[in-house]
Image 1 (cartoon, rainbow, N blue to C red):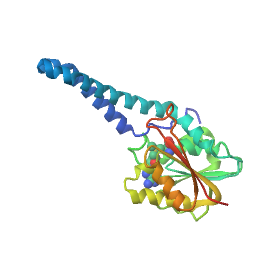
Image 2 (image 1 turned 180 degrees about the horizontal axis):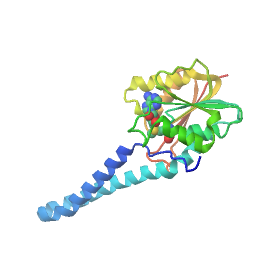
Image 3 (image 1 turned 120 degrees about the horizontal axis):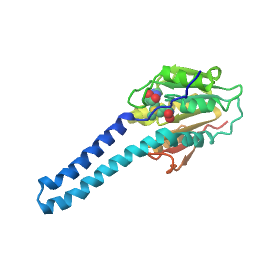
Image 4 (image 1 turned 90 degrees about the vertical axis):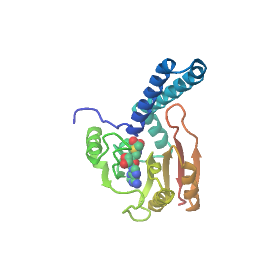
Length: 241
Ligand SMILES: C[S@@+](CC[C@H](N)C(=O)[O-])C[C@H]1O[C@@H](n2cnc3c(N)ncnc32)[C@H](O)[C@@H]1O
């Protein structure tokens, strides 16, 4: 299939809002001198300019992650697994297949299943059609399965997967109990001797605690400040064999 795969822009609405807020702050900073008395202007002008610049910078760093940084971050996550090629893998919140496709490329006889509920606000152009198109372009159709399924309630039997992956998904579940359910589902479907590699920008310590309480051994890795914004931590949880 001709064309290049497109892995989308994460949280496009947040980036848009940061840019709009940045522009608004800069406009206010520029028109402020016309409407304020001198001493007030002196205090407010740098503040508005700083707020505008911060919003712009946040938006640009998020765009840089989406366009460049996430590929390095994906490879850092996948490097936590000593791949043999025969693994049965699950990608939770697969979106347009960033992890699913790269994992499939590391497999010979193994297989990757990706699940998602396709939230439009979490990833630009999110949906099974976009994912299937990327899978076809990357030539991994035979090694992958796509399912519409919620991380909090998976249909898979206990101990189905050697590896469970998830990037930037679980924080999108807004209630604490829902995030706990998703982590417990990940622990449940993981085989004995298997590993979960979960990355997110917040709540990661909570995920680590939930995995530890479920009996998994846990390692928390610091964020990759150069490639990810917001900075993404990785938790690796292993289920004893
Ligand atoms: C920011 S995107 C990241 C997609 C992909 N993991 C990546 O790194 O490119 C987050 C994904 O998680 C999915 N998601 C959010 N809540 C979910 C849930 N409860 N169950 C399954 N997927 C979910 C969204 O639909 C979206 O595709």
